[in-house]
Image (cartoon, rainbow, N blue to C red):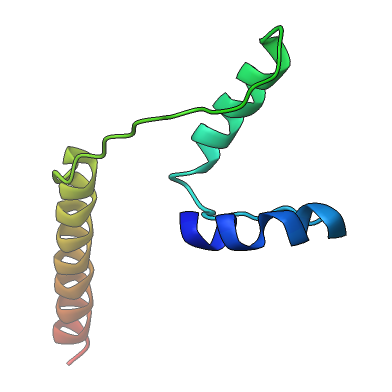
Length: 88
């Protein structure tokens, strides 16, 4: 990404184009932080470095919802089974 930005920076500036190297959930907080820093910094912001950490653990909410769906599936299955058994 840095190589592409270095290669096409001058052409992009001349054309009024912004080069965006990343887009998504992981870069929006950094972009908002850069915008806040640029607006509140008295001077010219030439460089900014950021750090982000993401954990890959299983959320207890996900486990709870999974068990809830399993429980509801079994409950509905048993209800339908009992309904048809009573009909015949």
